[in-house]
Image (cartoon, one colour):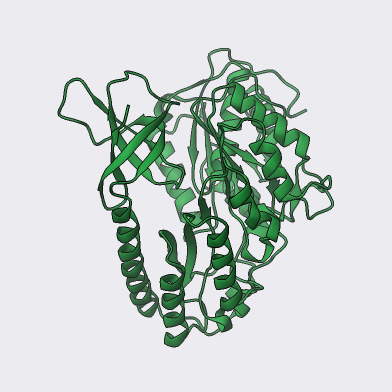
Length: 454
């Protein structure tokens, strides 16, 4: 049966392509390390025997992106029949067996709730080259995956603490592709975090589609999100802790207070606003209004005055008037976001908004998006420029493309507690994982230049 066979090739090679959110990145990391446990090694796509495509359906044209990726795989591999392509993620959950028709190399389609079975299912399919397999159902419980023996690489780790969403925002496909909300047990999360710390991680991001609703479902163990934050932060005072993505309606007083009370909770929060007009927010089923959002922002900044806020914004939602859009612009200015991800609205199958008839014309959407992004670019430039002269600490993650002229120094890059990308020249030949004191000397368009203070 699938999942019960060992890997048949000791020198098996694999390649993973990941689209979308950080949860997909974390899933791909777990799959990679699990395949390594079974004797597989990473390789370029052209040389790999197993290629996994981890998909996302939140943004525009997800089916087209998958088809393009599969076509590129066929081209790079020469269409070899011995290449096993597996497709997982939200598009796999959405389209299921249909994906088999996209490419003759696709032999495994695994939904978002069946990631734990992917390594075993790949092994079974390699032993049965004439078979295909689709696993795309939802389970009632949050299944714990076995911890891979292969260690995590790098100073930054991501930990899924819950999956799915119960909010059913009218534009969002997540409840249909990730299922209803399910929370992991706190002890399992802590054990995974400890394993990452022991492997050298210095920063952990807790992940969830609605991360601050953690524990508010039948699979939780009574631990609240704020309690979990304190438990993880307490594992190591030197640990940097972050989380994404919260919902404004679920941000409790305890969640806000955590920014004042937990020293190693980073002063950066991604808080999706989506729109600034109350009429649009109501049609989106966001369950907060503009006044409540502003009050939350003010309360957060009272708790942590230096808090850097970013957000998500949808432009041209069905029925959005020019006045509605202007209210969004005013809210962006009022909240002073340091960055934002903004997109034109597009239909997602099965969502309520896809049935709305008052769609906005594409040229109007694009005009509004350009105006919004111009405003955000001004705000982002102001935030980055204000950082010049400040001291900060940068966790080095890897080499920077901005190389130095000095032969004695190599330019490295990492992020400071506010999540800003900082380039800094260092003489240390291998500083990855080190936290370096830095003075910001210049602001680029999307990053910062620093000088080491040691």
